[in-house]
Length: 195
Image 1 (cartoon, rainbow, N blue to C red):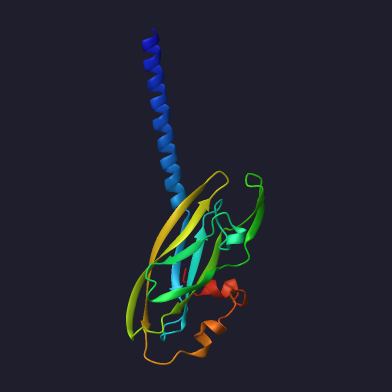
Image 2: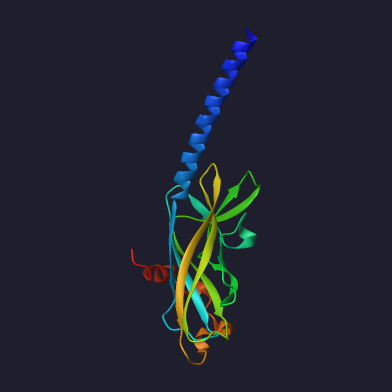
């Protein structure tokens, strides 16, 4: 009798485990499709030593959010990694609009996040030793997509290319004189993208 009960319990637990696995896989698949983004550069002509600005238009489905880019405001900041560091260096963190804020009782702290549609900007300093020509490179947008019950890490790869033209660095694109992101209205950044 005990052997029959043990076999039945094993069958029940196996079925429950498989069911939960399918639910979690479906949940993971659904959350993976909630964030969409596109990347553009700020202009078409670059000279060695200038700043290049990567603009990210991000759209997140209703009910989901990603964390702020600022390390002090986030449990796991949204960030960008560029794979070829010989072409440029990153200047600071991703620039963001003013994030939403809410108190999270589970972490006993305020968290800052973004939802809906917004733009982020990463400032890069082109190497002064780049020769004129075309360059292709890759990057990764690192984020956590969250809903009210869970967060799923994402590593979204993207590609971009740029051309270095022969000439001198222009002062308006020198990192020492770069614009404060807050001086650029979100609507102006979003208008650069074609929906």
